[in-house]
Each structure stands twice: as structure tokens, then as C-alpha cells.
Length: 115
Length: 113
Image 1 (cartoon, rainbow over the protein chains, first blue to last red):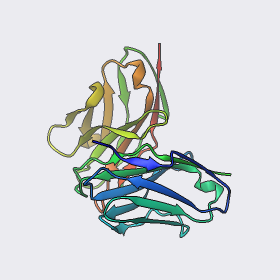
Image 2 (cartoon, rainbow over the protein chains, first blue to last red):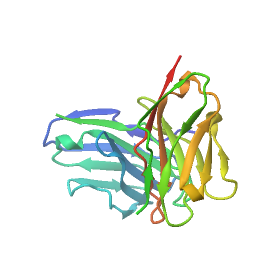
Image 3 (cartoon, each protein chain N blue to C red):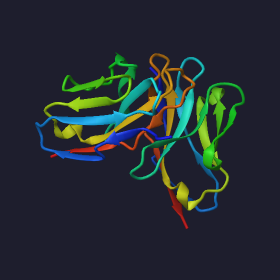
Image 4 (cartoon, one colour):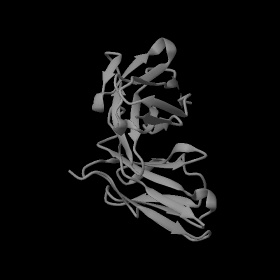
């Protein structure tokens, strides 16, 4: 079956603009995670969804970052008033449920460059 | 808080030689440990995982890892490296709360002919 898909693959934006990043998890997966991969910070957790609710938003770096998930499927990560330090690869992962044994399956990521 | 250390930023191995990538974790209870591989421009692919039981875990692509509680380590090994193994490798521990992954900083593997 299809894996996790993310769009766009690449996004170049100007400082101060808003961007939306999309994640399509594997069908039937209830748990969805966003991570960010940057040169200075490595791979860091942003937010976790179980169904449509987000019980763990502890990794969001500022209130410019928000995310939602609708219909227990597609998720959108929104960054408002982008800054150069937001430049990174944003990775989405899904798993069948939140069990510790479950594998998180990652998408190819969205590479964001803020000029 | 859980943490993962990968002490080697880069490793170069000759094709056909053996490989060991180091991973140390900090965690109070029994950890849930993972190794992922990331090829250039690709997402993360799971190589193997450890939860309990046999401390030697077999994964895909001929990789294995050994969990050593006394050393807080989960090193990744492969007996004979292929050029296609060149990639970045990440060790991770699963958080006990909402199950996020906590990653190490990664080790970039270069394979020389």
C-alpha cells in the first residue's frame, strides 16, 4: 500500500510569509507525528496527534507554529510569519496506534527554505 | 528526560569491511530502541527495533544490533558493508509519554571502494 506522503516536496518562501505543509498518513493509522530536521538541532519532535486531537504539542517552538488534523487522516502544519531559522526539513510519520511497540513510518519530508 | 548519544558524526568504511555504529541512551526503565536509516533526499526507514527478549536483534539489509543494559548501549553492526549502505543512521529511543521518538544526532556512513 501507499506510504506516508507529504507535499510540497520543496518550498521556498520569503521571510514573514505563511506556509502550509501537508501530510497524508498511511490509511488507517491513528497516530501521526511531526518532526523537524535541521542542521543545528538534528531531528526534533514537534507535535503528536491521536485521531484529530493533539495531546502532545510540547515540541512546537513558538506560537507561530500550529497544526491540525481532520477526519483522523490528513494533517497540516502551518508556520506563520516565517523566519530564516524555520528553514529545515519537516518530516511526518504515522503509526497504527500509539503503542510503544509500533513502528513510526516516515514520509519523504518537505524541505523548507526561508529567504 | 530520555536522551540518545551517537558519538561518531562521520565514519568511513571500505566496501566489504565490517561496520559498527555506536549508540548510547539515557533512560530509567527498559528502553524501546530503534535504528533508522536516511538516504540522501529520502525519509527515514526503520532498520530494526528492540523492546524485550533476545538482546541481539536482526533487521533488514543484513543489519543487527545488540542491546547491552550494563553499558546503556544499542550498537548497530553489519558484517560486510556494501556501497549502497552509504547513508545517515539514526538511533532513537521511544518516549514513555505520548510515544514520540527521541533521536541521536546521527552518524553519516561513507563507503570507500
